[in-house]
Length: 206
Image 1 (cartoon, rainbow, N blue to C red):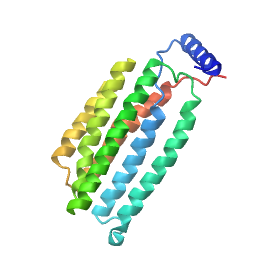
Image 2 (image 1 turned 90 degrees about the vertical axis):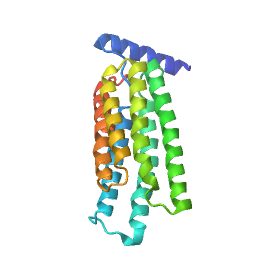
Image 3 (image 1 turned 30 degrees about the vertical axis):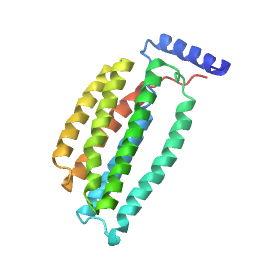
């Protein structure tokens, strides 16, 4: 740990003591970002399936999801820059949060790659629909784990909500409305708790 990091953590602990607060987590901005981005992409996909957006011989899917990937990459760079200057990066809860969501991200990448590969290999356009249930199951498990490790037990309610969304999406994965349902689910289980975490972030240490 560098001298600058040590001084930053000392100032962070002092600020928490003065404000009488439990050490907050720093992943709120990530949850809001992914919750909103997923909701937009899922809604756009639903709009394509239901004819509200032009099909463009299938190119519209590449536009939507290619744009999704680009925004996701740029957004993560911006969020990392924002979080790296926040106090409390070395707090136990924050480290647990980053590790848990980092693992969740790798699991999601594996699921997405596998589902897309299956679609290409078997010519099954419904293959990516399997991503829904698995993704929300991972969201729920990660939220539950982070809630327990960090002491932020209020997050468990969102974990159970995510499990409920998982159940529904596994039952109706191939229905067109499942994309719209997943969009709403993303706002409820990612963006909503993310917004609450943002409100609890520590005051800037100067």
